[in-house]
Amino acid sequence: MYWMITNRNITGSGLGDKFADLSFWKNESKNATDFAAWKQLKLDEFRQALVQVSDTFPDPTKTGSEDQKHVNIFVHGFDNSWSSAAGTYANIVAGLFSGAQSLGECVLFTWPSQGSPLGYFPDRSEARQSAEDFADVLSELYDWMAMKQKQAAKDPTQACRAMTSVIAHSMGNYVLENAMNVAWTRKNRPLLMSLINQLLMVAADVDNDLFRSGEQVEHGDGEGIANLCYRVTALYTGRDAVLGASAGLKHFGKRRLGRSGLDRTYPLPDNVWDVDCSPLIATQTSGLDVHSAYFHEPKCYDLMRSLLRGVDRGVLARAGSLPSVLPKTQGPPPA
Image (cartoon, rainbow, N blue to C red; front, side):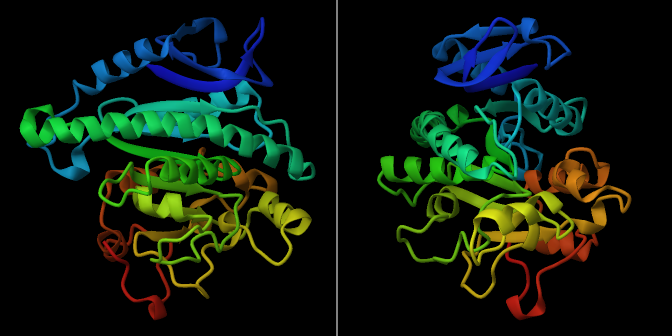
């Protein structure tokens, strides 16, 4: 089953590139890019349908954390038409959320994106505007999880059966960054509950010093992400020519997280780390295609599956499952 939340306008043939109120959709066909197969739902109907599915997940009190199912949200990047975003989303569902080894359910959040690496500023403005709408989604999720947490304190059988996770690609990470900061502020900067269990920042088109505030609680760009997520993993490669153009055109003196990895001249939060995925992407893949190659490479999916399952970083490193590990000067990878 496919799920979608969007702030795109509805056209005669699909979803357009203009802003509209949030709408909610479900697709029970096998074709995510066939707009006719999508059925629009009201928010309550969408929530009820998703909860109904997640209620069939294994009982978390009887299931190890690595084997629990997820409700995941995928946020796409820049210059994506609706059909392109839906196609990438379908690949992710096929790679991680289908079949006997399915990690659970995946929801597409698609936003009006008309930009390109050379037309960055218009898309950045749209991403910032979309962040307000995505923050509404995260706030709804936070309220639901807080309610389930209270219910579980009284009756463990009422615990939420789904872990929450996010995969954000390219400038979708800028949408996420701003949305998490809005949600973090709306909920009075809570420190007692993780909204997102696992966050994968794939080829992130954001500054690589995003988490420069370290463990300090202050108004830093990455504060919402660091404090509302249990673990954050940035997947990057220096072979990404798209982000090379991005950094050269619009960010004076700061590199892209998805091309250079984390800036370790600053202290980092303990729950944030990165993985150089260069060895996982076929050598014949061109520089421009590298930017989205993560969603076409089986080895990348293997890594993402382990990360979403919450496998300990030290375990992954010792098992040789990582293409690279943190420098020795940073100490062993935290849990």
